[in-house]
Image (cartoon, rainbow, N blue to C red; front, side, top):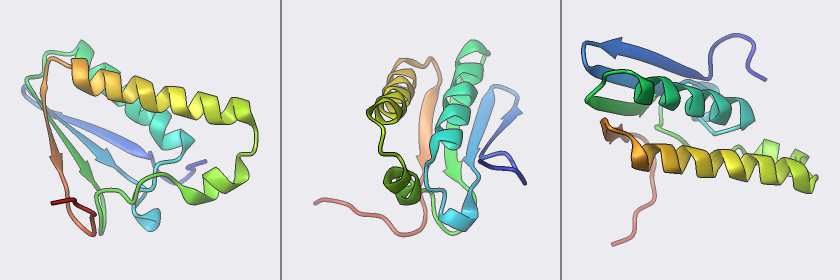
Length: 113
């Protein structure tokens, strides 16, 4: 659980919203706290009057993906299903949002040609 800072930060400037993944010590790996806060931030943006959303990561990388430590600790099917539902909610929210979403990707990344 994040104690020292918010795992996701939401900033607004006029009709623009900026969501920042904020677990730089883990290269913004996505754990359950970050996922929950990300869905909440996306809800706030979608409920507001924003035309543009920037999604970025704090630190050396945008995101390293799922938090492997969390995955290794979670051996319950219910916990896995809950996390997968949060991922599904996030994807649907991003797809259905009124605001145009731009991901500001930096750091190491995989791509397929």
